[in-house]
Image 1 (spheres, rainbow, N blue to C red):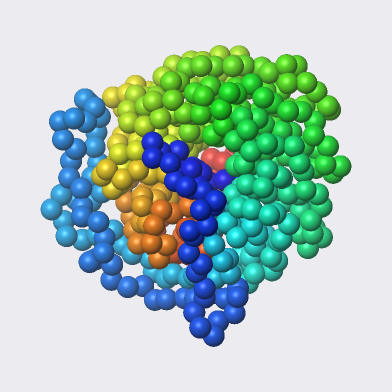
Image 2 (cartoon, one colour):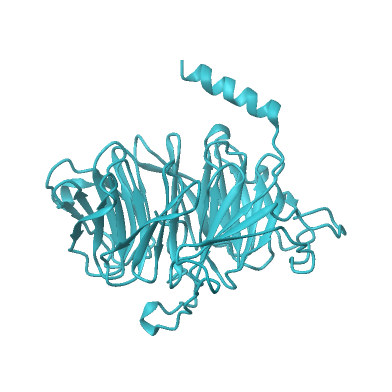
Length: 437
């Protein structure tokens, strides 16, 4: 699974050179440690290294938009640091993608052309998966298969129930494969690449069911639902495709084609019966899932990079290129949106919501990790990671631990003491239980 923006491209006006220059640093574990060792450290006082507290936005901020600062004005107290940290060693080049939503494993994909499967409890490295010949930058997992996407133009299929042995290497793409995902409740995988196409694969036999090639530039994001495949591209187009059940042509599968943006579509997310797209052009557009028609522009603001949906509240959180997070109501107006300055002037390429509770989200700016309380809309945790540069991916391990990766090949685990509203959480659990009866 690819978390957010491609770290080898970063989708910024100034492109970052990919693996071809071979200029990546090799990060080795401390002397005397094993290849897949972990390191733990006690929390330190990060007061001298945290970024200065921002103030309320100036007059250039959008009118009638409430601005909530990182902390109280003139307060010298930074957000709490992690209560404990741990570092996982093993990869010999940058880690591009990370998967921790599965209740069995942590999976990491690296520029060293390998994937690693780790224990969620002991952090021991169970398997090192070798089969690709270049950067592995996307990964997804279901009950049967692990699927990976690589810059060697191939898709890897690994059997999860058979020690992750390589099942098939799927050829067909003519560019870097940057996104992979499974169709829910089916052994069907979808891959997207910089050759401006998507491919749909029957995993059991490795058959390509369809090539979806309506875009004219690289695929920058995609969203998979049980009945449709949504794709966004650098050509500013959003396309919708029917999920093929057998070998099909591209024309027969195309359901919708929307040119509502003027720049790269960076993110797609579904919230109930609404799909939202975010773009560098500063617009977040909504679409009706049933009628497949554009609805309205939810918000106009800075360049957008990621979206996360708060299903219970019918809200969406968007990260921007100016170091802010926005919380928008799907049924509200722009005046009801909340704006939070995380790190002014520094773009936020990744946002990861804690899916089970929807109470906290993690985001990154440069090499700093932030944890935001969604209810109070304030930063409740902050950590300067050891990556020393842009963070490539983030993932929640559990209700209090966030994983980050970077170009140094490390997986950094930070555990925070987060404020939980036990009464509200109990009410939400009761409501959820009643709705499932």
